[in-house]
Image 1 (cartoon, rainbow, N blue to C red):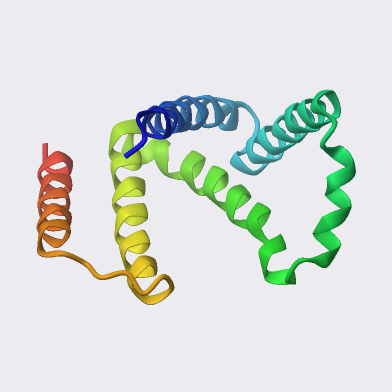
Image 2: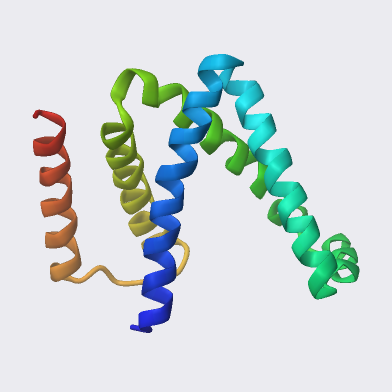
Length: 141
């Protein structure tokens, strides 16, 4: 595995925790849906500026030629932000995020099998079972 890609994935996990914490705190002062809107608008502004500086913005016209199903990612992103900011106040940050990771790992394994025709090795299945047992143990503390 590529070490740079692994470090980027770890950084994405750290940023997920930071974002969830910030959005939850903002949601306490406004509402979770307004916090979600603000988060997405801030993200839009940031990515728009990056694309302007790098010169990638003209490539946006290519989205008209893709399958429409590939254009709904923002719905899921908004849902993730909203649902995370709704669950953290009652579950706590670590409990909410371990359940999110458990959902990600389980669904990604299922998608690998059914969409990518990947085989699940005994080692991967054992790791999944151990992770889920660890999740249960973590939540029972």
